Length: 262
Image 1: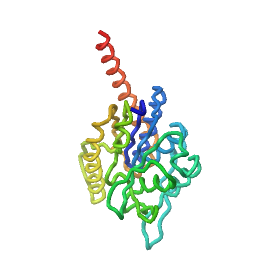
Image 2: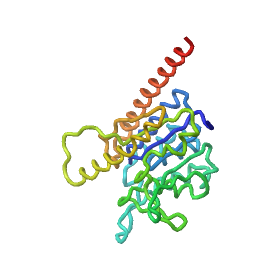
Image 3: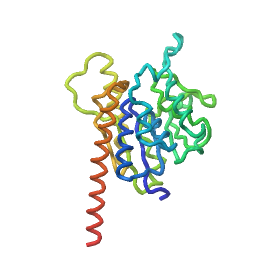
Image 4: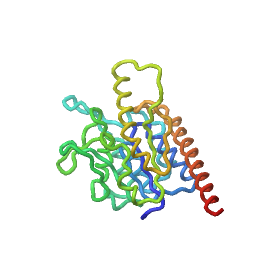
């Protein structure tokens, strides 16, 4: 194993704010991920942490923001938005537009529209482009052109990229913010679409989550994927879920250690 602890963060739109709460709980438990992998919203939070930003510093960048303050509307003939705010944030807070400039190794999942597959990038330049591409939800945000190819959300194919880290880490922490809970009603085409997306993402994530030593799933499905008005609640949900999971893992380790000593 190369690393003691690795961290994998899923996509999930604004539900990804829960990742910041998870980071806060890890900080309080003195658990320091040495390598990070992320997709979509998890890529944005993950790369900022890989650059050295604390949970509090990352949360300050998103708290009290509105959807209209973080996106740029596209021209009528293109019809899609751009993640202009996060692009500016990354250029400002990352030490450089290159993976090698980060304090910690970082892997990001992106979907290549031209080739038709997932790519996991961890070296080279155009770091910001790759992270923004990973968070560009199809049909909502514009694809990002990198080296002549168009890229969109990594979650289209791999919403929890455990593959680059599993064999490198003794302990792998996976955080899925696309949980599916029972709901009473599904009203209208928008609700149907969002619900189908949640179910599809959940099914694709579960096998990967089982490969993690600590699986954290904050119950955030009640929050909309574009709803920034409840950022504090989403953050707190992630924080509490992580505290519970960390405590359970440490208790299990302690029990196993005592049994082995006996």
